[in-house]
Length: 373
Image: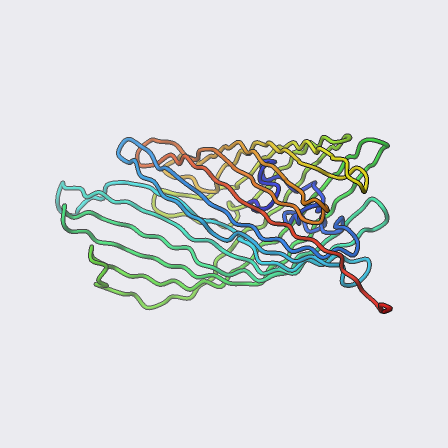
């Protein structure tokens, strides 16, 4: 629900934070605050380590992946433009249960693992309307897959594996606003964004395999539509001298889709975050410039899934550091998140996770017009 960028250490906040030393995609209006005549390239890499626990399960998984790449520039004054590719959503879950065997009193153990996610290629444009109001729009194309694998253990030597692979794609659009109130030593910023419902194209493939990964049965590909519900967010930030604090909430209205199945239904999902930043400065021959920045934050989410009457909830604490280069053109950020998701009550599992990212924000002066030799 939240982007992986240089604000991970602040609880993944961003609805009411401007894009200053890093590109903030959560709210496209933040692009309007990017420095004038500045070309910026950003790359984010992320890793995740997860431990799944309940009365019958104790297993681990890990992942290291590319999260985003973005390029910002002022192509047409006064518009700031950002072109990027980012991870739009991520699926990672694990559950266990027992299946009944028809006609008998026997049961077999079953483990279901889900993974995958969607990516978005986007072009964002934002501008300031006066000195205090910013407006921005993102248009893009979403694509990716979500994969589900169920393993049923028939005996110690035999098992059946059901694999469902869903592929999605569609265009997207979102818009946002930010408004600032500035004093001599302080600044308030208010932000909001909205992303309408997306009816994605869906292709589903199904296979039945044995323990040796041999395909026993395969179903013809099915084409359908998948409704990705509307999303919105609002937030506020306060900056005084070198200290910044922010809170925001993002809502994802899954209940409107009506999705449900065996043992699960969907509900509206909300993500609440709060973060703080302490910005230090340093003295150089060019005067006082930005130095090290320290971040901390908290995030709480209720999932869109209700499984066997249990709404899956998550909470996490975050820490981060931003290190500028000597010329203050480049910024290097490291953020980490430690938390848990779900409950360790069979057939559900509790996830204990550690997540981190490394963000490289590389800037240069972007010259336009004629130049004299």
